[in-house]
Image 1 (cartoon, rainbow, N blue to C red):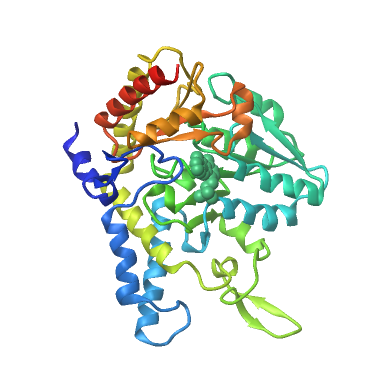
Image 2 (image 1 turned 135 degrees about the vertical axis):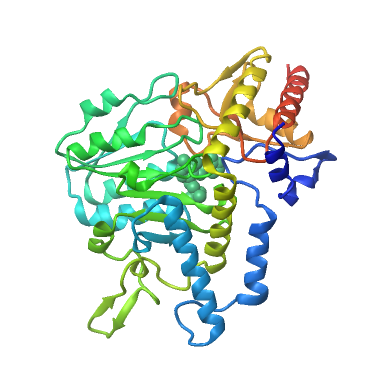
Length: 406
Ligand code: 7TS
């Protein structure tokens, strides 16, 4: 196996751990990734040596904490190729980013009868915020269907958009199917009718290069914890003119310029959207995770994980009665499947006894399960530390468990 990626694996302390007496095979990267030592170190160094609140103190410690926090914003700007750090808002994760766009931008700019288009493969976090908005202001929520391979069709989108369409909200990579969507082409179709475009990058950012200016999306959301960074930190990227015109999402400290009981003037971007003490160590940890990804190289990661996906797909075909859920031509390192006669949860429980962590659920994408008429799937999702040996362990354990269950 690739020596470079073997060395990368050695940077993750948790992978030396045993689970149920077996060395851990971690295949639930779609849910959250493990953290390399350097990210853990960045967080502990912050608390041991750099901790102070940001944007407030005139003392050195606070200035240094502010530099680290704002430095993390610049690192994120570069990572996404955003035009300005004013376009980088730190939030809790993709869920909060989408809720922010729904309640600030959409609630202000849309009215009854306007349409938002999502796709059939969205995570609940890109469905429910729009349903809440629908119930609040009476927008129409339309769903772009996918085919039985788990792909969406550009022609169908073309036929669906109209002057009423105000937003297309789409995942760049499906967490339940692995499908990589042609978001750049989709954005062009949406923009042609004057709609804005939100891209859910939760699954994409750990696995492929992302350039928000090349995609020309209006909003882009990511979660730190899925890309080797900490939980509780994420980013909403939005084009500056949009953010400038949007009202604040939450009120409180840091997001204001001046306050009287009569009138409050808001702070400049991006602080207008960061009320309260932010997740300082989260941003610092995220920046370290981004440097980790950039040093390996996103194209190299994509190529390596494509090898894992191809190998795992081939090996899983050895298992009789296994049906892949999601066979898109463009796929990232996610394999969802069911095995005839076996409940996914029973299988995941047996896998755990073998030290293999994978997911059996609806993956917060219940409409995907409804499309394929399954209650749940078993999902193996890959990260930079996985290798062919992990996949061999998985296939052997699945064979054994199947023999036991059937
Ligand atoms: N969008 C997609 C495509 C996701 O996969 C997830 C999380 C989210 C949004 C929400 O991200 P959060 O960081 O705000 O929670 N997906 C999963 C998963 O597949 N298993 O657990 C969480």
